[in-house]
Length: 79
Image (tube, rainbow, N blue to C red; front, side, top):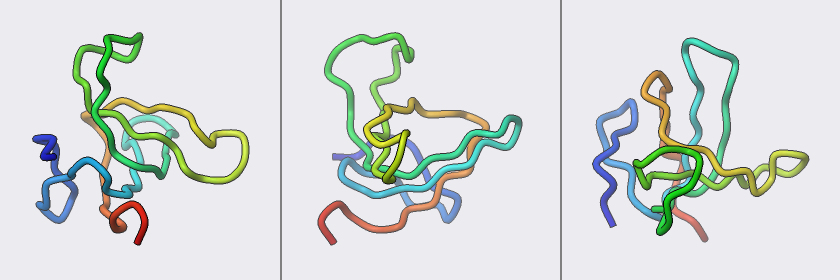
């Protein structure tokens, strides 16, 4: 499923992609799997979400799409 959001290399991020992001204007970064939220939550109306897959305290954390972040597609979930 397409998301309408693009990585720095111009490829469109799709549901199931493993992506890494780093915000330019504040010290926030993450790596996880792209999915589309089904319900309205406190992260905004845009359903684009990333579920953090790194081991440690941020595992499972949900991130919204950040306009000021640079995104890199690292592969597909399960690869």
